[in-house]
Image (cartoon, rainbow, N blue to C red; front, side, top):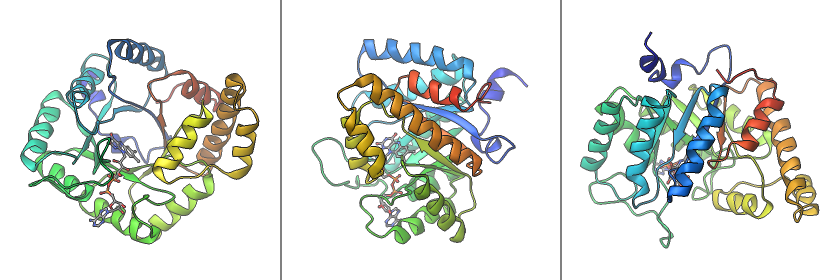
Length: 299
Ligand SMILES: Cc1cc2nc3c(=O)[nH]c(=O)nc-3n(C[C@H](O)[C@H](O)[C@H](O)COP(=O)(O)OP(=O)(O)OC[C@H]3O[C@@H](n4cnc5c(N)ncnc54)[C@H](O)[C@@H]3O)c2cc1C
């Protein structure tokens, strides 16, 4: 199989195999310096042979076209199996259709289909006229347009706008029924939340692979902000340990790596089908966690 064909492979062909998938998420940088740093990160992560990498899609502005360009480069120039994120924010269906055609023409076969968060300064998600209100509509549209392998977001602690976790799982089921092939979870810091979510999802008939979203921790204020935004929580004992060293960046880093290594180890021992690292365009903590797990390479 030619290298390009191999890397265009659908992610669901790897999921459910004998090994868990291990993957990284990047975001499109806003500056030239950010782009340089991302390229450096990619070079450092490539030897690990990640199962796949993904590129997020911004709430608006110029980074959106960057996502489409960079995801093509990850596949066609870096030889990495790449997944493009896409959201419904600010797009009507025809625009989404054109983006999907562009991705398909670039060779991208993997899509993370999301509703998206409102742009900065806007508190509520507003449906664009002629666009989609929820991710399940985007999934159905994308699946009908091209034969993408489609991932969707899942929320172990519930989506912040859905006060009822059962209702949130029913909404996740709608995305799977619309054609999603796998789920990647929001960050969580207590493995019990993941196991409960997985069990309840299975109980509801969601059979597709569920990949755990892993957020390396390097800064106490940053992780507090992230959990706050996405409705997750930091387990109390771990929070106390973090706060005890919050002014010592090295100690926070070491504690974060140790905690996330233990979390990942537990997940893998309990048959988690994949770990997706929210790398924040930095290689170091993800690589260190991965090495601690004892993998020779990711795939
Ligand atoms: C792995 C991952 C990757 C992400 N990548 C990005 C990214 O690249 N760019 C970005 O902007 N954001 C990204 N996000 C954040 C995401 O956009 C937000 O969490 C957003 O608020 C919800 O997106 P969703 O796709 O889960 O939406 P949906 O699945 O549409 O859910 C949104 C809310 O609506 C409810 N709901 C869902 N379907 C229905 C329905 N049919 N009827 C009624 N209610 C419904 C849900 O319960 C939930 O409360 C990502 C999140 C994750 C976990």
